[in-house]
Amino acid sequence: MESIDLTTNRESQPLSRVPRLVYGTAWKKESTGSLVELALNAGFVGIDTAAHPKHYDEKLVGDGIKAVLTKGKIKREDLYIQTKFTKVAAQNPHDLPYPMAANITMQVHASIDSSLRNLCPTSAASDSYIDTLILHSPYYDLADTLEAWRTIETYVPHRIRYLGISNVPVTILKSLYTEVATKPAIVQNRFTSHTRYEGELRKFCAEKDIVYQAFGVLKQNPTLLSSEAVKGVAAELRVDGEIALYLLVMGLGDVSVLNGTKTEARMKAGLDGLKTWNAWVGKAGNKEKWASWMNEFKHILGDDP
Image (tube, rainbow, N blue to C red):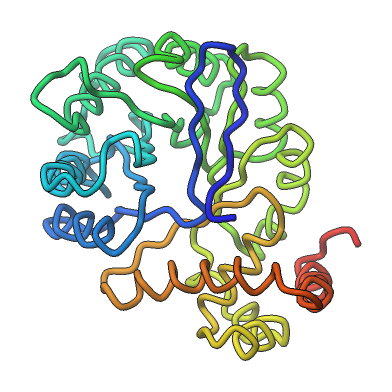
């Protein structure tokens, strides 16, 4: 399965599918547009960005998307595009998508308006929508987090289809989930041993049909890359260790992974590896072998058997 259905809270909400591999655009700077175009031409259909000029260039992401769409090979409805609202404390105070002195509600409105313009696929503003808007991180005060979330909710399901949150501890996620009408469809967190690989949070996401979206999978996990489970998958599927690790992380359930590579060869290697895995795991006898590797991998992570 190369994509996952997002869970809807509303009957009128359009169905969106988040790809297993989403192209991440952080820290691409002036190369952002060309790399987005390269990723889409390589076969990516999911793009992650943010209204966060300190680390992203959302306008160039939109330019890259439009460059591909104008060629007519794919349509906007074929793509999954997610962006983020970033609180002022994490922004560069000299380069903001909203007035610094505005209250949270007005900052959210201004940021979303900027994102809809940046990511508009045509010259008509009415054509612009965002598949998922992610709150980049919670505020220190739950009341402020709820103010931002409830403001974003007013755009669902038309200009924004789904909501998510990033960099969130499981305790805050549970509080947010209880308080809001539009439940988070995605949680995007760093996958690392420092948070015990988000075991408790991933369990909560699974219980609530929330897609867990992992970032930092390769850079943060040299121990996992050298594990026997990764080596076994890599040898069997004839992929490299990095792709094998991606596949094992995806095998944990409804899990999507951010991939921010800058080369066409690595882009295609990731996508081809996913296709190889999907074809391989469906063959007789392979499900048992895969289950054995997953059990070994979960043991390393400390997941419940």
